[in-house]
Image 1: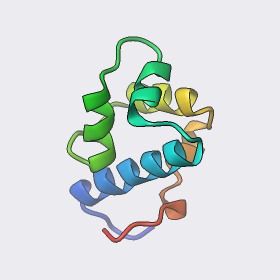
Image 2 (image 1 turned 120 degrees about the horizontal axis):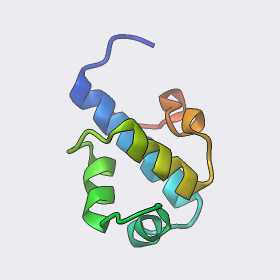
Image 3 (image 1 turned 180 degrees about the vertical axis):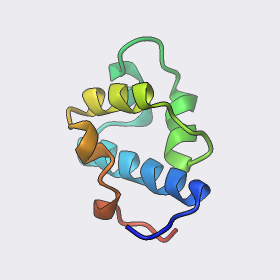
Length: 83
């Protein structure tokens, strides 16, 4: 992978999460409800738009909620984006 700015990496990762969520037929509300623990829909929105830097633990919880591995979730080469 080439050198990527942090803000671009956040946007690409968020786009990847969004793509997987949509492919599963989940809304942001659905995903927030499936994430272990208290997780607000606005957090899903911030992550998908690249406006926040999720922790590794948060990414793991999102992967579990989407029923994918963490490596699949972070496979940004699979992400279709214009960043």
